[in-house]
Image 1: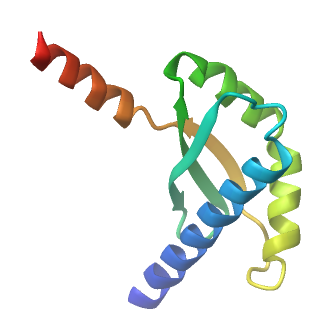
Image 2 (image 1 turned 135 degrees about the vertical axis):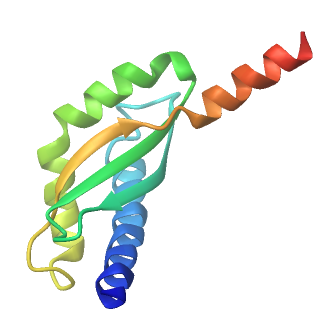
Image 3 (image 1 turned 90 degrees about the horizontal axis):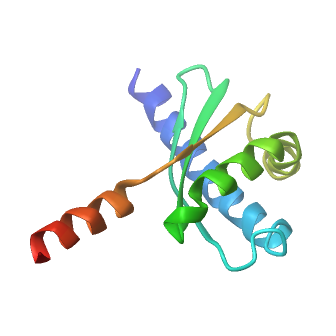
Length: 114
């Protein structure tokens, strides 16, 4: 059981690194002026699905960026497949989500400062 969990964590970390690099290298022109950070990746036990959490700055571009990444899902998954083909049998289905924890922290900070 622990072995599966360790493998899940290793695959999640690898996906996090690779997707961050793919977004930075291949989509920098489309996302000009927007900072996208892959904050967390959660992989299902069977490695069939990966939830990708991204933080977007400025915050007001978050939904548009999420929509763009969702549109590019197949291309991103394909690029991920090229990088990970020797490590996993099949590349997980990707789902993108906004990690709004930084926005939440900033909001709390602003409220405390008032």
